Image 1 (tube, rainbow, N blue to C red):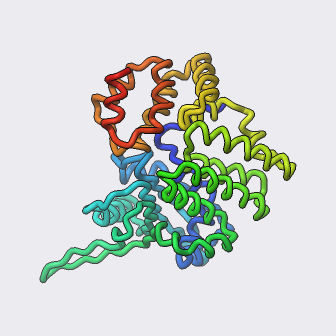
Image 2: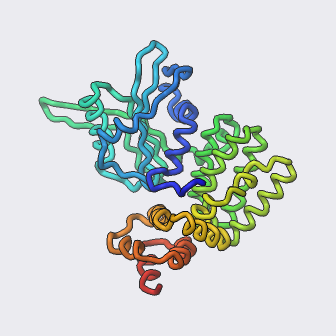
Image 3: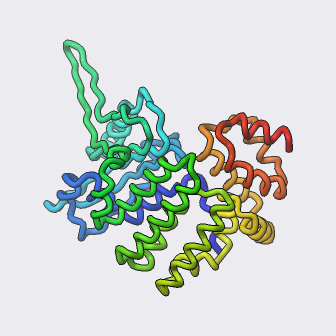
Length: 336
């Protein structure tokens, strides 16, 4: 029985691992052209922890350090930084330099540093760090792509067969429909229909659906409509790939039930969670969801959440869909 994913297992981290070659090929074609993709790449999680033991995880960052092989036979380390919900950060470029220098200092390897910016600020485009005075000067440049730039290149995305274009489209549609749930539901269905129409294999449809479903959260009424329409669509095509997988139930009951406020999913998920001793995981999930919707949870509010009962967690799981800032959470906690 699958347990809820913890905070560090962000959807971006998952999808990047599943489609790493596709991501690099799509975003950084010059680097991808140098890589011998027939040789397996390796995610260097332990090595990354050594250079960034205090790195933020979960909502904001999804960093990966990966070893690949060049066509000439040498190994190359790629430092991939995904800024998920960024605000302009003064020291961002400096942090990229620090990571690069730590890799070289500890492992004597010059990493190729790449960053993917998922924020909505069109003017924020860090791609280098410069330091200079009359006797010493340093310029460090790193690869940078901005997902927002693809908003005006939608036809290009639709025509591209690279599966990572689906990731980009889902992220952009999630941004565009933050205040229009009905439009989000239609966009979500449209993206999933596209997976079938493009002829993706069953497992790829499931993988990409999980990312789409995670970033395009719907209120409970529209969520029920979405699942009904999706089920009809899959039955018409005789390809019940997604709805059949969801019959497993537990992961969706806990993870999606609380996350999207589906009353039945919450009840089933919480009940099964209690039976499996998963009260701790349910709290962890609530905190992850709140961290996604709100900027940062003060310690006093987190302590109050830790003290909630399962029944209260269930209510909070439904209410958090309407939260816009920490004061909303504070008010709910005081009233409940």
